[in-house]
Length: 103
Image (cartoon, rainbow, N blue to C red; front, side, top):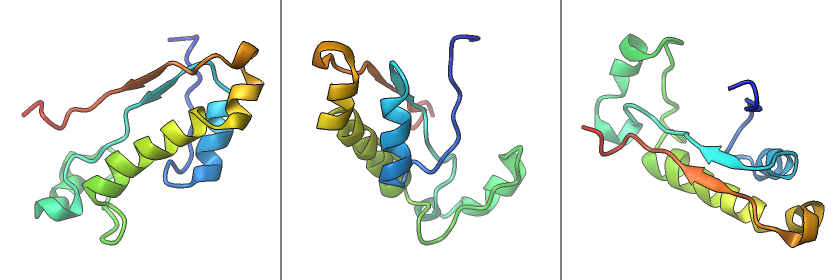
C-alpha cells in the first residue's frame, strides 16, 4: 500500500482527471455511491457514511458518479498528451472496481 498514490479530486472534472492520469503509472477507478439519488434511499447515506455524506440531488446519480467518471478516466489515459508523457506511447493500466452487484 505504500506504493499507492492516493489522490483526492473531482472525478467529474476532466482537467483534474487528466492531471491525475498523467502523473501516475496506473489508475484504479473505485468511485461509487452506496445509495444514489435515484435509489430512493439517499437519506441512508448519513447513517452508513463515515463522513455523513449527503448526495447532491443534481449530480449524485449512478450515471454521473460511476459511468461518467469512468469515461473521463478513459478519455484522459487515451489522450495524446498522456500517451506522449508515457514511455514509447505505452498504455496506462486501468482497473475498475464496483460493488454495485455485490448485493
